[in-house]
Length: 267
Image 1 (cartoon, rainbow, N blue to C red):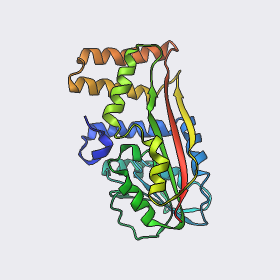
Image 2: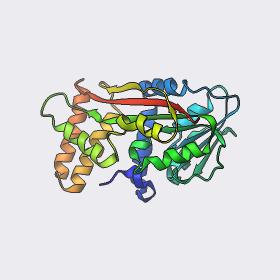
Image 3: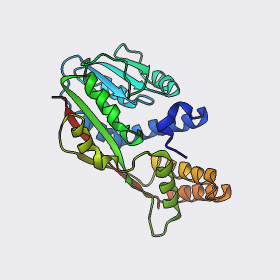
Image 4: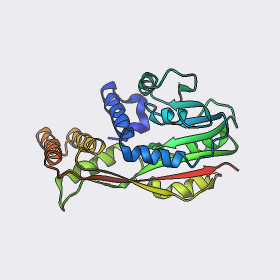
């Protein structure tokens, strides 16, 4: 099964609801909130900055941006109207935030019309990410800021021993829901090659033990993907999900993934 984010407009509504819930669950994790505040805080927004987020999903980053000093207007673009409806529902009624359906590889905005562009957990899901970066550079003003953050999916793990049956779920999740698991390791070179002045990567980590939310969803989505492909039976998929929850109940759960961000400027 290909990465659902790579062709999100063809995903059934039931799966979109699952993914929307995952996006909001992830955004509520304290370590994720700290990471978001950290890298967005490195951007020197000019007064009344106009900011674009490409691939905004249900809008948690747009909501954060709208609350930041000097940010005057936030526009979130996503190809999924399903996600955008949820974003509008969750966002405060404010003229500062607007959502628009669109393709990040062919933005409808005028050149040099934004002070900052944010790509949050987007590039790892996009075939041909160079096109996204080219459009981001086009719509940025000279001296405008690019903020990029993504997960290093090759570090994703649920393993507490070797072998560990839950790691198979994690691996299947990455295989079926991620386009490029190594994107973080290419990110600096890719952004630099797209014509930006790039600052060093910053690293972060997400770890869940006693109350897993995001990483528990890796088990569910990975097990379902294996069952759908016929790799395992539905009975075994259910057993793997039950094992994940049993580990959490007895305090033996571990889920981890590294993240990284970078800040860049258009010359």
